[in-house]
Length: 238
Image 1 (cartoon, rainbow, N blue to C red):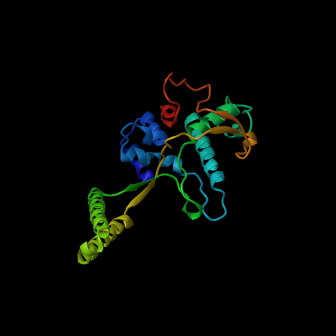
Image 2: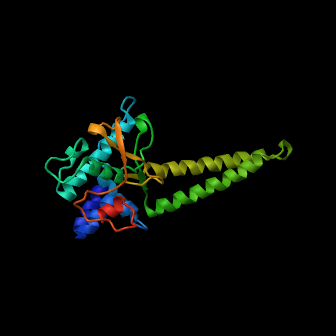
Image 3: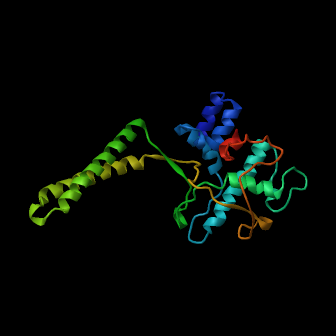
Protein backbone atom coordinates (compact mmCIF):
# COMPACT_ATOMS: atom_id res chain seq x y z
CA UNK A 1 0.00 0.00 0.00
CA UNK A 2 2.84 2.40 0.83
CA UNK A 3 4.62 1.51 -2.42
CA UNK A 4 1.41 2.24 -4.36
CA UNK A 5 1.19 5.61 -2.60
CA UNK A 6 4.73 6.52 -3.71
CA UNK A 7 4.03 5.51 -7.32
CA UNK A 8 0.78 7.50 -7.35
CA UNK A 9 2.52 10.54 -5.82
CA UNK A 10 5.20 10.46 -8.54
CA UNK A 11 2.66 9.95 -11.32
CA UNK A 12 0.64 12.91 -10.02
CA UNK A 13 3.79 15.06 -9.82
CA UNK A 14 3.09 15.78 -6.15
CA UNK A 15 5.03 18.87 -4.93
CA UNK A 16 8.12 17.86 -2.98
CA UNK A 17 7.09 19.69 0.20
CA UNK A 18 3.79 17.79 0.26
CA UNK A 19 5.62 14.55 -0.59
CA UNK A 20 7.85 15.15 2.44
CA UNK A 21 5.17 16.19 4.92
CA UNK A 22 2.83 13.30 4.13
CA UNK A 23 5.55 10.67 4.55
CA UNK A 24 6.97 12.08 7.78
CA UNK A 25 3.72 13.18 9.41
CA UNK A 26 0.70 12.51 7.18
CA UNK A 27 -1.21 11.13 10.18
CA UNK A 28 -0.82 14.46 12.01
CA UNK A 29 -2.24 16.65 9.25
CA UNK A 30 -5.61 17.99 10.46
CA UNK A 31 -8.36 15.86 8.93
CA UNK A 32 -5.78 13.41 7.57
CA UNK A 33 -7.09 11.25 4.75
CA UNK A 34 -6.57 7.50 4.53
CA UNK A 35 -3.92 8.01 1.84
CA UNK A 36 -2.04 10.54 3.97
CA UNK A 37 -1.92 8.00 6.79
CA UNK A 38 -0.74 5.28 4.40
CA UNK A 39 2.10 7.62 3.32
CA UNK A 40 3.60 7.38 6.82
CA UNK A 41 4.41 3.75 6.06
CA UNK A 42 7.78 5.21 5.00
CA UNK A 43 8.84 5.20 8.66
CA UNK A 44 7.35 1.78 9.39
CA UNK A 45 9.98 -0.06 7.36
CA UNK A 46 12.42 -0.28 10.27
CA UNK A 47 13.52 -3.68 11.59
CA UNK A 48 11.35 -5.44 14.16
CA UNK A 49 12.07 -8.69 15.97
CA UNK A 50 9.28 -11.07 16.95
CA UNK A 51 9.47 -14.09 19.24
CA UNK A 52 9.91 -15.14 22.84
CA UNK A 53 13.45 -13.80 23.29
CA UNK A 54 13.91 -10.35 21.66
CA UNK A 55 13.71 -7.46 24.06
CA UNK A 56 10.72 -5.34 23.12
CA UNK A 57 12.10 -1.99 24.31
CA UNK A 58 15.45 -2.56 22.63
CA UNK A 59 13.85 -3.02 19.22
CA UNK A 60 11.48 -0.10 19.78
CA UNK A 61 14.55 2.08 20.33
CA UNK A 62 16.32 0.56 17.30
CA UNK A 63 13.30 1.50 15.19
CA UNK A 64 13.53 5.14 16.29
CA UNK A 65 17.27 5.23 15.63
CA UNK A 66 16.57 3.88 12.13
CA UNK A 67 13.98 6.62 11.53
CA UNK A 68 16.36 9.37 12.63
CA UNK A 69 19.23 8.07 10.50
CA UNK A 70 17.01 7.56 7.44
CA UNK A 71 15.47 11.02 7.81
CA UNK A 72 18.94 12.52 8.18
CA UNK A 73 20.25 10.89 5.01
CA UNK A 74 17.16 11.44 2.86
CA UNK A 75 16.01 14.92 3.87
CA UNK A 76 19.00 16.55 5.55
CA UNK A 77 21.75 15.09 3.37
CA UNK A 78 23.50 14.29 6.64
CA UNK A 79 24.79 11.22 8.45
CA UNK A 80 23.66 11.67 12.04
CA UNK A 81 24.58 8.22 13.39
CA UNK A 82 27.78 9.36 15.14
CA UNK A 83 25.81 11.69 17.39
CA UNK A 84 23.92 8.75 18.91
CA UNK A 85 27.03 8.17 21.06
CA UNK A 86 29.00 11.46 20.97
CA UNK A 87 28.97 14.95 19.49
CA UNK A 88 29.49 14.66 15.74
CA UNK A 89 33.11 15.34 14.82
CA UNK A 90 32.48 16.68 11.32
CA UNK A 91 28.79 17.60 10.99
CA UNK A 92 26.89 20.27 12.93
CA UNK A 93 24.90 18.08 15.32
CA UNK A 94 25.52 17.39 19.00
CA UNK A 95 24.44 14.38 21.03
CA UNK A 96 21.85 16.53 22.79
CA UNK A 97 20.42 17.67 19.45
CA UNK A 98 20.33 14.05 18.28
CA UNK A 99 18.21 13.02 21.27
CA UNK A 100 15.99 16.04 20.89
CA UNK A 101 15.27 14.73 17.39
CA UNK A 102 14.84 11.28 18.96
CA UNK A 103 12.11 12.81 21.18
CA UNK A 104 10.27 13.96 18.04
CA UNK A 105 9.98 10.33 16.86
CA UNK A 106 9.59 8.76 20.32
CA UNK A 107 5.81 8.89 20.58
CA UNK A 108 4.68 6.07 18.29
CA UNK A 109 2.75 3.25 20.03
CA UNK A 110 4.57 -0.09 20.32
CA UNK A 111 2.00 -2.76 21.06
CA UNK A 112 1.71 -6.47 21.82
CA UNK A 113 4.11 -9.04 23.22
CA UNK A 114 6.41 -11.73 21.83
CA UNK A 115 5.16 -12.84 18.38
CA UNK A 116 2.38 -10.24 18.47
CA UNK A 117 4.56 -7.13 18.76
CA UNK A 118 3.49 -4.45 16.28
CA UNK A 119 3.10 -0.73 15.72
CA UNK A 120 0.02 1.20 14.60
CA UNK A 121 -2.04 -0.41 11.87
CA UNK A 122 -4.75 0.85 9.55
CA UNK A 123 -7.41 -1.51 8.22
CA UNK A 124 -8.18 -0.85 4.56
CA UNK A 125 -11.55 -2.03 3.24
CA UNK A 126 -13.48 -1.27 0.10
CA UNK A 127 -16.37 1.16 0.45
CA UNK A 128 -18.88 -1.70 0.18
CA UNK A 129 -17.06 -3.84 2.74
CA UNK A 130 -16.85 -0.90 5.15
CA UNK A 131 -20.61 -0.32 4.95
CA UNK A 132 -21.25 -4.02 5.57
CA UNK A 133 -18.75 -4.07 8.45
CA UNK A 134 -20.46 -1.09 10.11
CA UNK A 135 -23.89 -2.69 9.60
CA UNK A 136 -22.81 -5.96 11.22
CA UNK A 137 -21.15 -4.07 14.09
CA UNK A 138 -24.42 -2.23 14.82
CA UNK A 139 -26.45 -5.42 14.44
CA UNK A 140 -24.25 -7.36 16.88
CA UNK A 141 -24.37 -4.52 19.41
CA UNK A 142 -28.15 -4.32 19.16
CA UNK A 143 -28.70 -8.10 19.42
CA UNK A 144 -26.34 -8.41 22.39
CA UNK A 145 -28.27 -5.68 24.19
CA UNK A 146 -31.53 -7.58 23.71
CA UNK A 147 -29.84 -10.86 24.68
CA UNK A 148 -28.48 -9.31 27.87
CA UNK A 149 -31.93 -8.10 28.94
CA UNK A 150 -33.42 -11.53 28.30
CA UNK A 151 -30.73 -13.48 30.16
CA UNK A 152 -30.96 -11.10 33.12
CA UNK A 153 -34.73 -11.55 33.37
CA UNK A 154 -36.37 -13.82 35.95
CA UNK A 155 -36.23 -17.47 34.90
CA UNK A 156 -40.02 -17.61 34.60
CA UNK A 157 -39.95 -14.66 32.16
CA UNK A 158 -37.14 -15.94 29.95
CA UNK A 159 -37.91 -16.79 26.35
CA UNK A 160 -35.44 -19.57 25.62
CA UNK A 161 -36.44 -19.83 21.97
CA UNK A 162 -35.79 -16.13 21.44
CA UNK A 163 -32.44 -16.37 23.23
CA UNK A 164 -31.38 -19.24 20.98
CA UNK A 165 -32.44 -17.29 17.87
CA UNK A 166 -30.50 -14.21 19.00
CA UNK A 167 -27.37 -16.29 19.53
CA UNK A 168 -27.69 -17.68 16.01
CA UNK A 169 -28.10 -14.20 14.52
CA UNK A 170 -25.08 -12.90 16.44
CA UNK A 171 -22.99 -15.87 15.30
CA UNK A 172 -24.06 -15.33 11.69
CA UNK A 173 -23.10 -11.63 11.85
CA UNK A 174 -19.74 -12.47 13.46
CA UNK A 175 -19.00 -14.98 10.67
CA UNK A 176 -19.85 -12.34 8.08
CA UNK A 177 -17.46 -9.91 9.79
CA UNK A 178 -14.74 -12.56 9.77
CA UNK A 179 -15.18 -13.04 6.03
CA UNK A 180 -14.71 -9.29 5.53
CA UNK A 181 -11.73 -9.29 7.90
CA UNK A 182 -10.05 -12.07 5.89
CA UNK A 183 -9.96 -9.83 2.80
CA UNK A 184 -9.12 -6.62 4.68
CA UNK A 185 -5.69 -5.13 3.88
CA UNK A 186 -3.48 -3.92 6.75
CA UNK A 187 -1.31 -0.83 6.32
CA UNK A 188 1.58 -0.15 8.71
CA UNK A 189 1.30 3.52 9.65
CA UNK A 190 2.56 6.12 12.11
CA UNK A 191 0.49 7.44 15.00
CA UNK A 192 1.09 9.61 18.08
CA UNK A 193 0.52 8.60 21.69
CA UNK A 194 -1.98 10.75 23.63
CA UNK A 195 0.79 11.55 26.13
CA UNK A 196 4.37 11.89 24.85
CA UNK A 197 7.04 9.61 26.27
CA UNK A 198 9.87 11.08 28.31
CA UNK A 199 13.15 11.09 26.40
CA UNK A 200 16.66 10.94 27.83
CA UNK A 201 20.12 11.09 26.30
CA UNK A 202 21.48 7.55 25.99
CA UNK A 203 24.99 7.57 27.42
CA UNK A 204 27.31 6.17 24.72
CA UNK A 205 24.18 5.16 22.81
CA UNK A 206 23.02 2.72 25.50
CA UNK A 207 19.28 3.06 26.10
CA UNK A 208 19.70 1.26 29.43
CA UNK A 209 22.02 4.01 30.65
CA UNK A 210 19.88 7.18 30.54
CA UNK A 211 21.40 10.61 31.04
CA UNK A 212 19.84 14.05 31.00
CA UNK A 213 16.18 14.38 30.03
CA UNK A 214 15.57 16.30 26.80
CA UNK A 215 12.55 17.86 25.12
CA UNK A 216 11.67 17.58 21.41
CA UNK A 217 13.75 19.89 19.25
CA UNK A 218 15.71 20.23 16.03
CA UNK A 219 19.40 20.80 15.27
CA UNK A 220 20.40 24.44 15.45
CA UNK A 221 21.22 24.61 11.72
CA UNK A 222 17.55 24.09 10.80
CA UNK A 223 15.00 26.95 10.72
CA UNK A 224 13.49 27.76 14.10
CA UNK A 225 9.96 26.44 14.66
CA UNK A 226 7.65 29.43 15.32
CA UNK A 227 7.07 30.24 18.97
CA UNK A 228 3.96 28.61 20.37
CA UNK A 229 3.95 25.81 17.78
CA UNK A 230 4.44 22.28 19.11
CA UNK A 231 7.70 20.58 18.17
CA UNK A 232 6.63 17.27 16.66
CA UNK A 233 6.86 15.28 13.44
CA UNK A 234 4.51 17.65 11.61
CA UNK A 235 6.35 20.86 12.51
CA UNK A 236 9.65 19.11 11.76
CA UNK A 237 8.41 17.98 8.34
CA UNK A 238 7.15 21.47 7.52
